[in-house]
Amino acid sequence: MCEGTARPSFARFILEHQKQYQFEDKELGYIAGGMFAAGSDTSASAITIMMMAATTHTDAQARVQEELDNVVGRTRRKLSPDQCRHLAIRKGCRRLLRFPHCATKDIIWNNYLIPAGATVIGNHWAIANDPEVLPEPKKFNPQR
Image (spheres, rainbow, N blue to C red):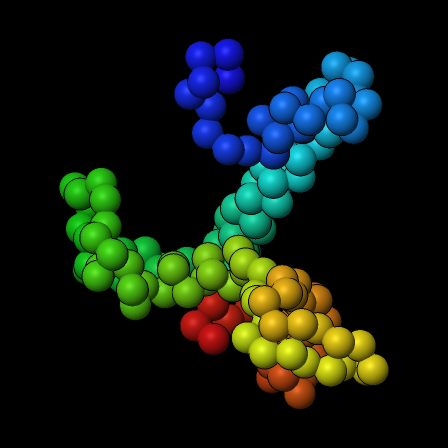
């Protein structure tokens, strides 16, 4: 930051506005550290869940491995975007790593206005465990 090459980030913002928000150095460390930990923990948890699912559902893991071997082989290190598009592993990872959605128009839900452009984070646990939305919600099926 001192050299003027730091890219925009949350940490940069709070450092630049430290006096305005009356943060002490220690508070800045906790705030930035908490944001970093939250993002890191979410990704690490999703990867851990995927690994646990692969070890407990070996049939699904075997299908994914076979598909990777057929598309990529065992000697290449990287997939092209076209190769990734239809892979079962990509579908499985997307299931675990859902990103927030954006409202495309104003929505009224339970007398609340969700304005167009608002970030909407769904309750994925409730959706994934609703048998009307997802048949057999307790069954592990990465092909859905």
